[in-house]
Length: 199
Image (cartoon, rainbow, N blue to C red; front, side):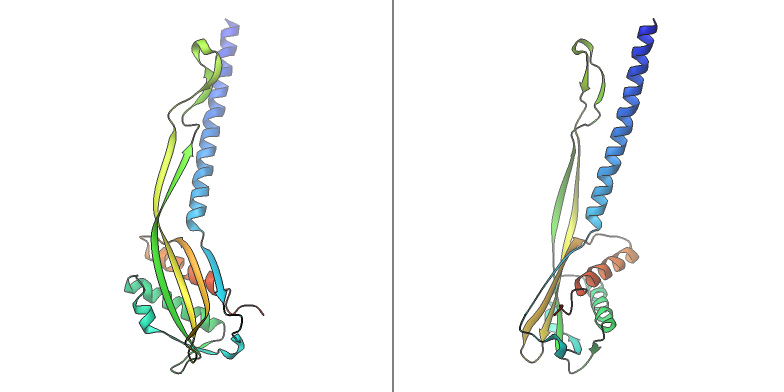
């Protein structure tokens, strides 16, 4: 009888450990998913022949901005964020600018599949097979998000040539206005950290 009680206690402990491990793994995967959703990947490219010390003033290039495929509210949010960042760097908005600022946007659907192969399985008595892993259903989680790309182009006004381009990629979905505003500011800020390029 004591032997059966020991087997029962052993099974109960294994089951508790398995449930805690499964809960921890699920939380860990969720955190990884949330972290990947919140990250913004940025890159920049520039004309190595351009003398960035010559650029002191800017204005927005309306024909380019009008073509950006984004709603007018988000467009204004992006332009305000760019203006704030450039002015914080010492640039001045002008009617007769050294450089023009244009933006370009695009979006694509991103599908992520998280496969937890452990499913609801647990270590335990498997009947005739003895102790071993009892597999449950596989726990596949599929999420679809809209991944947005924002390009900021800085153009030499006189030469009409692109001198710097920043790009940012990340998740733009949010029904919360404050979160969306903060997300756009994050995009722009992380991109313009790389402007002007270091000598």
